[in-house]
Image 1 (cartoon, helix red, strand yellow):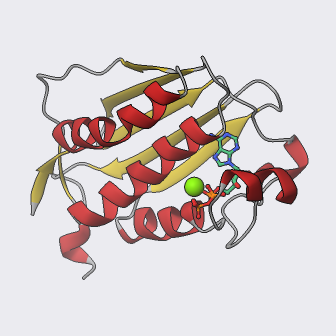
Image 2 (cartoon, helix red, strand yellow; image 1 turned 120 degrees about the vertical axis):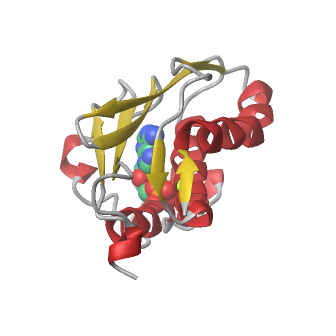
Length: 161
Ligand code: ATP
Ligand code: MG
């Protein structure tokens, strides 16, 4: 079924807003809220992906930090881009964050809660949609996560389930 990714993204932002507010973080929605980006998605699955990516941005960004959220069309793809100015990920660990149970700095992450499954599950869900999830980061300089999904007129989940 077709869903508007913009309204889904807005609803997920609303869900996590309070957590960011409690950390005095500013969530900056860059996307045009009146726009529609239609894609054939498993709504619950993509909601879970967006919840994890946004929760990570909040969790791994210090008090007073900033999180930019954008959504756009690019050719036959929809992209959702979440950028934070948090603690970032060391270059040598970057390739491992999609592994199940992998967490950078085990002791510190344990204190923050979580299991290290969020990105592994997110990657699986996004790939079931024939999409991609990528993360760019520099330690101490924040992280940028890009979720890319095919638009309705491209191949959607309909073709693969
Ligand atoms: P869970 O999502 O299961 O609650 P988690 O958030 O630790 O736990 P993932 O979402 O899979 O697990 O992320 C894996 C690891 O990647 C995290 O433990 C953290 O070290 C790192 N990470 C993920 N997102 C960010 C981010 N935005 N900034 C810095 N590090 C991040
Ligand atoms: Mg997580």
